[in-house]
Length: 122
Image (cartoon, rainbow, N blue to C red; front, top):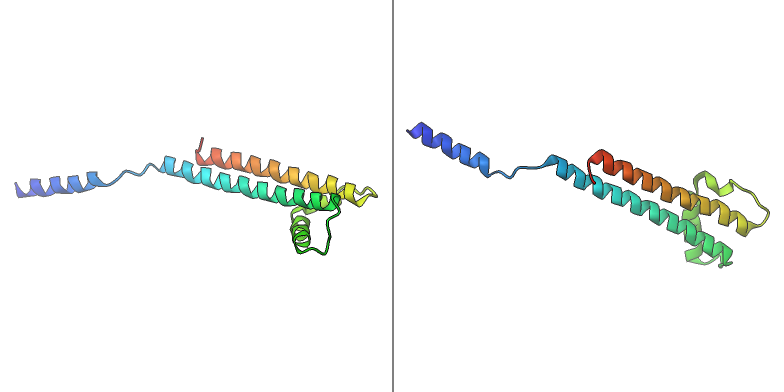
C-alpha cells in the first residue's frame, strides 16, 4: 500500500505542472517579431520621407537634425539614391528616396506576413 500512495503522489506532482502550448507560444513570438519588423520598416521609411521633406523644403544642410537625417537616409536608400538622375536635385531626391521609402514599407510588410505565417500566428 505504501508503493501505491507514493506513485499517486508522483502522479499528482506531474499533473500540477502547467502545460505549455508551444504552438501558441510560437505564434506569439512570431507575431512579436513580425510587429518589430513592420515597425523598423516604418521607421526607415519615415526617415527617408523626412529627408525628402527637408530637401524639397530647402532645409539648412548645416543643421544638426538635417545632417543626421541625411546620413541615415543615405544609408537606408540602398541602391535607390542614384536610380534616376534628373538635373533638378530636389526632384532626384524626391523620386529616388521616395522609391526607397516605398521599398522599405513593402519589404517589411512582406517579411512580417511571412514571419506570421511561418510562426503560426494569425
